[in-house]
Amino acid sequence: MANPFYSGTVAVIGLGYIGLPTAVVLASRGVRVIGVDLNPVTVERVGRGEIPFFEPDLATSLSGAVALGNISATMETPVADAYIIAVPTPITPDEQADMSHVFAAAAALAPQLRPGAIVVLESTSPPGTTEELSRTLAAARPDLTFPDDVNDSPDIYIAHCPERVLPGRLMVELVENNRVIGGLTPECAERAAEIYRVFCRGEIQLSDATSAEMAKLAENSYRDVNIAYANELSMICDKLGLDVWEIVKMANHHPRVNILQPGPGVGGHCIAVDPWFLVGAAPEEAVLIRTARMVNDGKPLHVVQQIRKSAGRFREPVVACLGLSYKANVDDIRESPAVEIVAALAEQEPATTILVSDPMLSRLPASLASFPNLTLVKAQDAIAAADIVALLVDHNQFRTLSRKLLEGKVVLDTRGIWR
Ligand code: SAJ
Image (cartoon, rainbow, N blue to C red; front, side, top):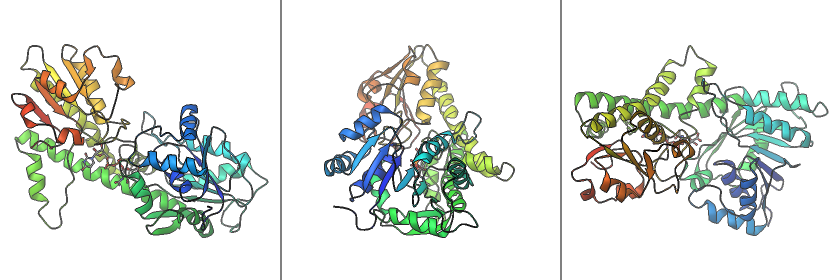
């Protein structure tokens, strides 16, 4: 049955962590969705109704949408009534926003645009990107009119709708979270909102595109700065021989204090990346944001030093490193501090045996596979053989491990779950 709120066809460009769940949630509500991805394996798997990565509830929703016949996948950008661009926006090695995927998607969709189409950019982007996207599309299609100061009823409508969903809770948060939709004109925001009203039960706030871009960056930078504060406290406490977890717990009893949890560093494709877009947009002003990034980026090295210090007392040390993903209960290793720690340790301590365990992963990531002193094993086996146990990710399986296994071991619990 077609959706009563939106009857058009939506092409979702990029079938990754955000694009695929968005495509699925639209399709399962009766919208005809065409998923587009450059990766033939992803296209083939999605077409068959198989998820290319793990996310709770995604598999059942995808197979339901495929069974309804509402979702298909292709490598070619099709003609559609609406386009949602959800491609990666990483940073370059010198921390500049890499917008090449967004503009490659724009180049592929430009020839397909028909009057009345809506283009929504979901990818997290530096302020001004949606305006630039519009100018790029306008240059490619001089036969069409685009939204600008003089044209408030253009052929093409363009908006930015940043995603806000938390990996691990994507399918719930996609539906329940509030959203910001920033249009290049108010009419653009309203047109884009028609699509999101299909599945979003949260409040939809309408704004302009650059403010929406900025709001998203402000959210993730807020989180990064607050985690940096917790991480800095943990390094101060290490130096002073204090238990940071106890300190944070006590401090959080104050009615206006809510310190986040220290960890081995900040990973993932969002919080470890997006604040750099603000630093790039205003390098002289973004002092706190840049410093927070550096504190969080420095934390894995601090953990490596702690492990090496403990290893110094053993002749042939065996270290168990528990967890590789960037956070608990996901299989995503992008920007993972745990991977960085394990790689640095393997490189700096070639005589140390490193046993790695992660219940979310069936094999070592490519960046770790070539170290001769590193093996992926079950957690119990890693702990049993280890002198030192470094807990890097707070997966549920590690929380429930018997503490008896840890007796007689040097334990470095970077997540504070075994206290
Ligand atoms: N972390 C800590 N201590 C904490 C909380 C998190 O060390 O107290 C670490 C995690 O272990 C992880 C990193 O920070 O390495 C980020 O994890 P996260 O769960 O805080 O966030 P992400 O990156 O999974 O998702 C974030 C979310 N943004 C905010 O919470 C402001 C999500 O809503 C966004 O949609 C997502 O970024 C994104 O795609 O931008």
